[in-house]
Length: 171
Image 1 (tube, rainbow, N blue to C red):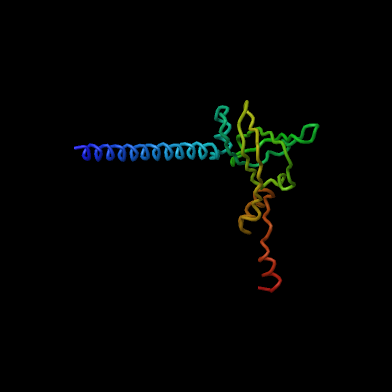
Image 2 (image 1 turned 135 degrees about the horizontal axis):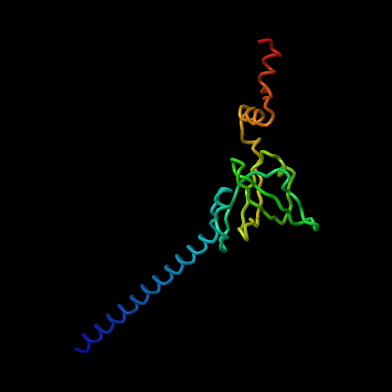
């Protein structure tokens, strides 16, 4: 009888330790899932159009991304030379979003075809950019698209380089 009672006691202790281990594994894995999801939600940036960024209220701590084109004659720097103020516009050129950015800006920024990609927060109607990236479209468009852009800009298209080559060959 004592032997049977001791075996039951050992079985209870074994089950008890397995239950404790199972509960520990559940707690650790749920903690890992919680922390991973909170890190990913903070580091994820939602990209908006200028129209959407203009129409949203001031954002919380979450960063957003906005892309657009520079509005002519809207760029100026503060007297200290660090803070830049400018506006970006949407594809249609109708809506504008005021932007403030502290940092260096390259020459390509002033190209009228360059796309400005910003990450930051909207505060009191102004987009406060933490990062600024500029994508020059000339690297990504074909000669036909360049000719179309020139037509929009100058109303007279430049002939693509292969046209002048054909004329030189006499064909």
